Image 1 (tube, rainbow, N blue to C red):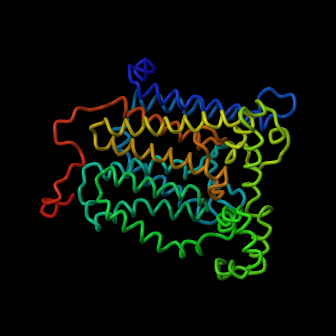
Image 2 (image 1 turned 180 degrees about the vertical axis):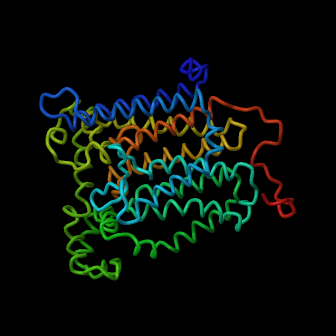
Image 3 (image 1 turned 60 degrees about the horizontal axis):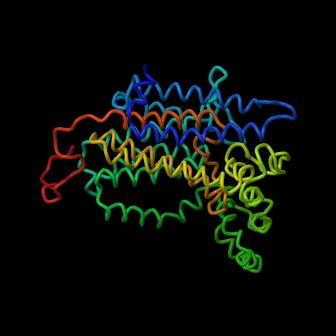
Length: 421
């Protein structure tokens, strides 16, 4: 009955499901191909991915058929505070339930189940911001943007402390798109962007050495730039943090293919070796041998291109473009202010995360550890992506009638005398 309600004559729902299904299938097949031992039919990682997919699918059906996005909206602030508390718990030293891996404190392990609070925060953040902006007009002024930025910077600061630079980079694009969709003045957003660009040097010296090396690795892919910096290594000293050993910093930069650019080089090699149609499922040297780190996680797109070639890679890109187009259409057609903001926020989150991963894999962006939605291995990432999909479908499915002016239409001449909410 719930499933029948879910699929009732809505082209947006069918379109979203048709776009997500190939992504999930490609993820499971690639994870199994890259992690299965010789002779095994299904690897443990692929089996876990199927379990997480089932959990996420059940959650999606419950959100659409039972709960609805409006009810979750009323819980937006408590969910946001709960996720903030979980993020703060991670960064505090010597607390129980924290699972630390590779000097990163990103996971909580409770009763044998490992969850990543930063993934949960992505949904909680979009819910909270959409709920805050839904009936307000004070963000049409520059001081009125302070509260949305505070809501954004709190989780960003805690996630950066873990550290998890990739997830941090997702929040600001979502904020700007949601503010623009809500009607914030473009000149105010441009001013904030320019101020952020002016603060980039401060941010550069606050991130860790390995993160700076990953950013530098993108630049060092150019042979001419490598030659220039090899002849002028003193130039790079200006980009080193005050506590960094200049000799070690230069060594790591000059050995970029081993240090900063190792995954970039191997990822592009895997993509290029796939050709037009690929090596085939479970075939190819990058599948059979451990030539690419994180080949079933962050760099899974390279393995998809290696197995199915340019054609398979373009199919995945088309699926993400379809999700973005359908999500924007859902946001445009709904009359509910909260639903409109929620739809555009989730759509932006999907788009930014997907194309950040794709650009990283093909060498046009630094290695940030951002997973590919619906495809990469990881329970928290997959479940959260499917729950976000459920919220987007819920907005498409539930469109309340509006007996009022259309949302986010303001008379700027009366804005100064209007009561602030």
